[in-house]
Length: 163
Image 1 (cartoon, rainbow, N blue to C red):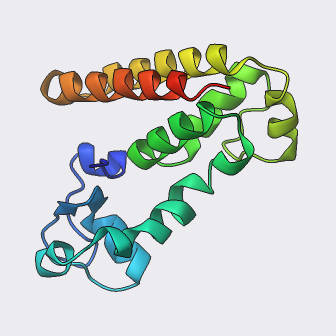
Image 2 (cartoon, one colour):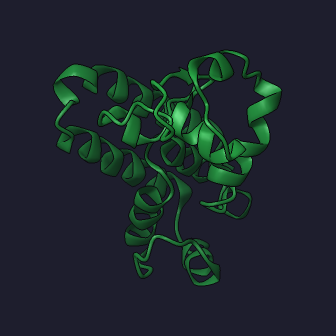
């Protein structure tokens, strides 16, 4: 299961239409409502299936961090952090690591700069940056163990995919 946007972690638990928030298949009510363009009360969220959310994950997260265009290992690490915190934060971290302008949008210049970096080094630095981000959150005492476990597991998975 994938967690929703960090806005849910920080307490934004509604769907933006006055309904109580919920999460299913890693999709928060607010993300679900935004994706389908209508309210996503708990009854709607309970009916979600993996086949319902695959395209949403591709469009909102995988494509936003250009995972098809990044090195193996780096692709899944960026994607997973994007699911958890939105695309801007992991994109900027990636750009800082490779010396690109950290504007939060991965484009041709970022991809060109990334080609000159070792994926192992990038993944390890993404892991460090993500951990620092988690530790800066006010709810780290409550959720930090799970966030840290997830970050560590993603590093392990990313490293297993390196070319």
